Image 1 (spheres, rainbow over the protein chains, first blue to last red):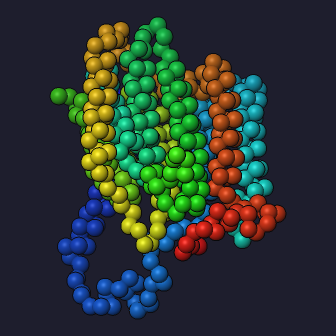
Image 2 (cartoon, each protein chain N blue to C red; image 1 turned 30 degrees about the vertical axis):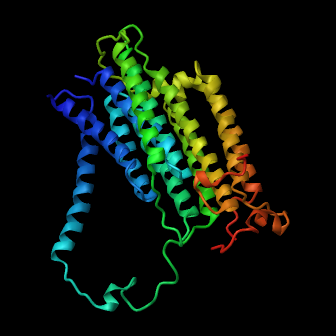
Image 3 (cartoon, rainbow over the protein chains, first blue to last red; image 1 turned 180 degrees about the vertical axis):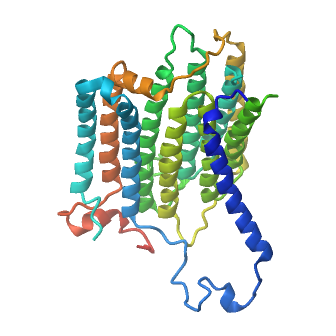
Length: 121
Length: 107
Length: 186
């Protein structure tokens, strides 16, 4: 089996195991699980407490800002990884380049901080 | 055996056209942004395929197209972040994310 | 058909079929999850094209980041009184369909007609991440630093447009645009 994907065989096995476990457990519980049809059982929390409002509620903007900053710093990580792999051979010059990159991004971080993007009150 | 350039280009063309259809027909801003991401992905695939196909024994350097794709990824992330912020601002103003209903500039 | 070819077909199907199904789905949340499947297929294709770094970057940035952002966008803008669905009328669908078809025909024509000077594939043995790292910090140094400025602009712009209130700002400023909105949920 000469294949470019040969090194990823463990990942494939892992993925198959995860998917198989999820599907088989769901299937098993739907086959073997007891079916009780009472009003309490059909309610949201199955214990008598009533849900407050709809579950289709809108979320707060704060979560969204954190998600935006996460994506942008995710990209930063993408640029960090290749640099980290060749860190020793690039030496001081590479370090300075990376510091400039990080410094510019830090400005945005400081701006978001000053603007209260991380205030959780 | 590796996959051929022409097959990757066909795949890329098909997915790009799907993205174009989505951008042209959908009216929800989020769905339009999603279709844009599909188009960007199709282009990335063709870039990687070209980089693989033009790799020779003399220039064993696959990094050119890949760096290009990383730049496209960075632009896509920035676009998604700013685009969805604009979507949020638009939603606050008009209470809708339907592109057809946002017609303030219509004469 | 060899084993490698069949794996390629699996990835190609994973990339195309969800993208195609997005066209016929009306729930936006379902579209986001279909997009997840499509992006995962792309990641697999990158792996098979000997672009391991790009494959994992795809998973990390697109699936782990941008897709989550889309789901947040859905959660932030949906209203409980309007279901998150939409319909494409024939007035848009028919011209859009033909535009997409024409574009696909043109792209396929170019892909088939152009005599690509391809070389027989060279087996790649060394990992590509160090090469990318060295090139990124030497040949492509200008785009590399430009990307940081782009990300800075995106960060500042997104923070500003999303209107997170500045600590010292008067109370009504951020809420100004909401004054004509009826039935706020917050």
